[in-house]
Amino acid sequence: MDFRRTYRAAAVSYADLVSRLPVDSDVTFGEWSLRSLVGHTVSSAIRQVPEALAAPPAEIAVDSPEGYWALARSAPASLIESARAASDEDALSTGKQLGDDPAATVGELIGRATSVLAAAGDDDLVATPVGGMRVRDWLPTRTLELVVHGLDAAGAAGVPFEPPAAAVAETAALLAKVAAVVGDGPAVVRALTGRGPLPQGFSVVV
Image (tube, rainbow, N blue to C red):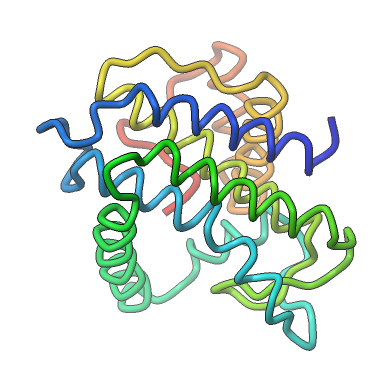
């Protein structure tokens, strides 16, 4: 699979998960309700795709998927806190906008996103919070959002969920690259080969 088909497969799989989630139950993930978690995922990984492609920047600021995630590790704490507050607000707002049939709304948004992507070139630029990126570098970061937050939601709700193998492989490879870029590569290699545990709460992304 190429990165576009991998993204679409992850999105379709996520839509199926949403159809099986008790979105309006009292299930929570951290400080987010399940609906807000779905709202965050939909906003960051699906709804924004047409928006990002509609207003391309003039130049590239980040030239790799791992660079996108690595930047957060070096950002000032005040900027991270501000971004989290905005994300919380957006998650709540988007969650409400999903309406009474979130799965149907997600399906419609996926249709729009994949239609726009089909007309975009691999090297076309998209506007992101960290600056301009190529489509081929940015889209895997959206697949990661679908896989990681899909697993978050499924785990919180106790609902079975197995993302497409290609999407899991792409996400795992990207996370490994992030680990290498930020200096955690050796620790991850040791953990993946049974040669040492990772610290409690370890994460390569903020």
